[in-house]
View (cartoon, rainbow, N blue to C red):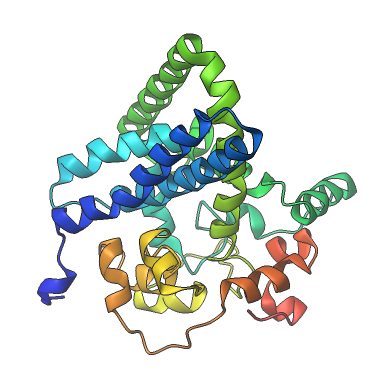
Length: 308
């Protein structure tokens, strides 16, 4: 990757922050108009802002969004606080995700989907939530992967676990203090938008590796799959170029991201992997939501015949 257009660039990185800043500022202005219609629109815009903070957390986690590692970590913690994911813990688990993509039971973010659900009650809850766009999967993904120190302990050495525990403690303390000082504002304005943003985040996450035929190691001693080979175990989706670049920050181009995980988000659309540019987001959404949640999440395209 010697192309100068593919290098980290602080100017481009900060330029990408214009969209969330505008959304946040506009939503605050709409809240001040004291109208139910403008409050609703402000909540919608702020929910998109919170979805963007999740994408930016992901970018800073690779330490390649800004030119400097320290700047990436600084903003990474800001976005982590805004999206309620401890940044340091995100880095540890997400790095393992990129290492083990292609082995469904070894990737810590997909290991729980390698086996079907036995409980009828749990299957009902999963299907019910999937049907009604209740972001059960995203909440489970967030809490079990980045806040659960017992899970993190299985994957990291003791010194890393200590830092992960510190990260969780500091974030929790921050939220307690902020809620104590600004509880009315949080409950009236922030929380409704944040809850709505969970829906957008779940839809983004569920496009990427779910319902794809991914091998299971079944306890065998296997090696990580190369980044380029991971492309076939990954899914992108496509939408209007303006939305993809300036609102999703190319987060939809997940195949390119797995092929070149160190490439900044603002460069992903400059790479052509010579693969079909499908599905469109609307096509994925209609097909995915036409299935039971248990089928989409815990089964693969080979088992259901549904290919996106």
